[in-house]
Length: 87
Ligand SMILES: [Zn+2]
Image (cartoon, rainbow, N blue to C red; front, side, top):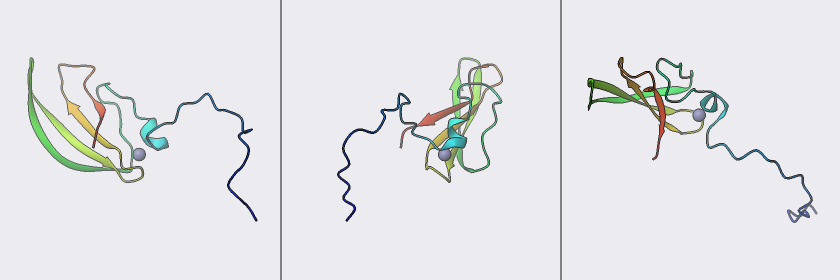
């Protein structure tokens, strides 16, 4: 009989839980031209207006962990790139 009521003597990890899978966690966010990973499935894209002009934002979804990503292609902003979107 293997009950799941183990005493809470397991070592407590100092690592916070990551919401993404390993490849997602490896994506450098908010950095222009940072690569994505092979399991991202491209979705729709849209235009958005920035101070510098119109940029294209492409939506991706991770096939492994389901995280939704957006990639902003903005030549004028070195800190535009990958970001996680809710939902
Ligand atoms: Zn993922």
